[in-house]
Length: 263
Image (spheres, helix red, strand yellow):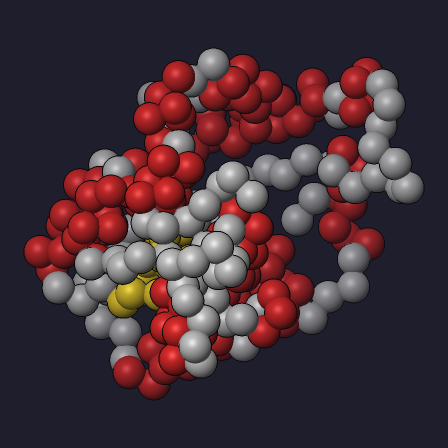
């Protein structure tokens, strides 16, 4: 707990959130059905834009499928997770509902395939995943969120047989923790929360950067002394010129899935 966190109100929910960390090593123990039902029901109770409930999740149970997804992620621990979910922006189900009510889903009157709806469905999927993750931590399970499932979205769409008007958003691996990593540092609250306006001066915006760089560097040095990791600002600079992100663009694959980004 940082010095500023000593002044916070607390309860079990807040402690669960403040102590969340990514777990990448799991005990080889199955998760019981009651826990699975609890986690999935909690996810369903997350907020949903306009009550569209425009997300779904695939629970990956087949080991060969897990192995294939782990290969996409370039992370072997994905295949070892007792529970693995892929959360999906899903307007296919709502398109089927609308079509049953007489809406022509391949005409210009259909708007569930618009970029706005895609973004809202993506947001809803993230909210549901976060609710599931928090519930899992509260039950002494460990989780890691997998943005790496989008290393090859076309392959993932093929593996999961995702239909038109769907798109994978994130993965979530869950299991009983077999490691206890230190909490990763976060910026000071004033560096991310602003009153009434965004800072007009970048000097003001970055006033806490040097101290944060030091804390991040110390965190990585203590975690793995044999593999130094760059300070936060160096990591940002490296990612700012990573041309590999162009090959992972959402737009062309999402358009293949029937979403439109021209309106």
